[in-house]
Length: 201
Image (cartoon, rainbow, N blue to C red; front, side, top):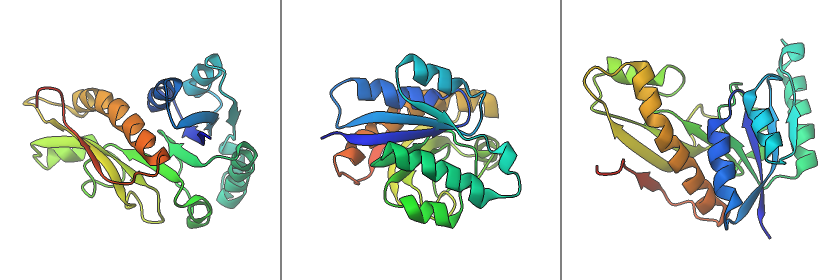
């Protein structure tokens, strides 16, 4: 029986699309829900076009009441009965209570070579630090921000003249390779670390 995957997004859903495309082929998992916190998230339209069930829990009416927002998220997720939850550009901080509820089932992709540059503005921080390489990490989600067990990483060289925008644009195709590869392994019970490098590297 295939593992059931719910994908949480906030925007265009490019990593969601990469995950879903991979699951269209022979795969140990299948998408059962794409859930957004933003009604205008472009990823909702893309998921619906692929006949994947979608839902939206707009965070704005819950301002100042994160437990109520997360209760609504939990209700939607529980109805979908996911075995795995993939955070794919979901731009809301989750509380320890929510994370504990789904711990061991929840993955996230972060645009840095963790444990370097946890949190935001990772591309600028990598440039500011003079890094020769940059990358992305797929990890299990725990109560520690961007601190769960690392399941996979991909690296790219930093080039002369790179800006945060050019670095982000070059990294995105590696994200789209890494996240599906890790999900496929995770769905089969493989939690060993996967490393990817750019073609020709």
